[in-house]
Image (cartoon, rainbow, N blue to C red):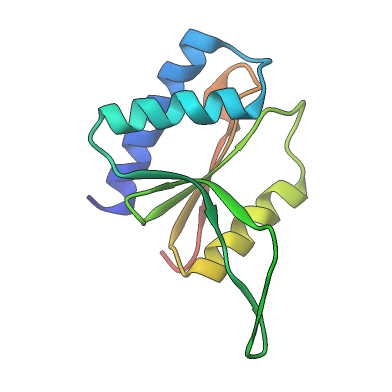
Length: 125
């Protein structure tokens, strides 16, 4: 599947999770539910994937973690906040840069309607 195909499938799964659970829960609840939905679709999904960071030739032991990684092609960063800020977008951009993955989705489940809180962030796509 291409990044765009995966994005479409992920959005559908996110809409289903949001319609069942609604806004206002912890991020970890949405992460677990979205992971279940994506696996039902036959996608390869990993949660809390460590992101390596380097300074010159030195690997830094940092706590960067991707919420969900789908088919090793799409990063999903989940939030459950009042509103997204610039730092949330920068976080996804940084993960894309560090992993050389081309597409990231930033999803804020604490919003109505959800479609206005799903953002595509690209890295040379």
